[in-house]
Length: 149
Image 1 (tube, helix red, strand yellow):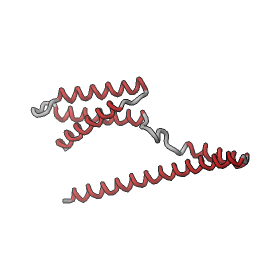
Image 2 (tube, one colour):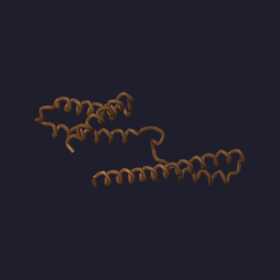
Image 3 (cartoon, rainbow, N blue to C red):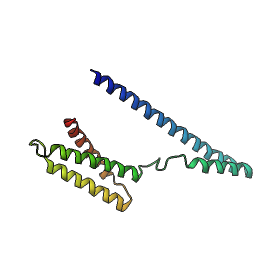
């Protein structure tokens, strides 16, 4: 019973952390777009001093807006692939020698993850089919890991 309370508390804390992070990101976006709007207004008025100040504000705030905010960054996907590989390797070690688990299948899953990783690193592009494949593999191996927890 204590485990359920701990899990519920952890879940609530995680929700609060996500909400706080999303709130910070939203505030950064609002600030950034307010600055862009100011720049547009200044351009209409042709006020050089205000234009220079607005430009300075925009470039100062541009560093605060996370890179890849509007698309998945390649670094994030590669980090997720690394996590997925670790999960699959853990499942391979947990199921090695067990009758009801196909270790060979898990090794092939790991090979496909490595192939996706090399493909993304080589081309610097992300294919949606690869993302779907990653999600499917993650769900599968997460369930297998839960059997051994």
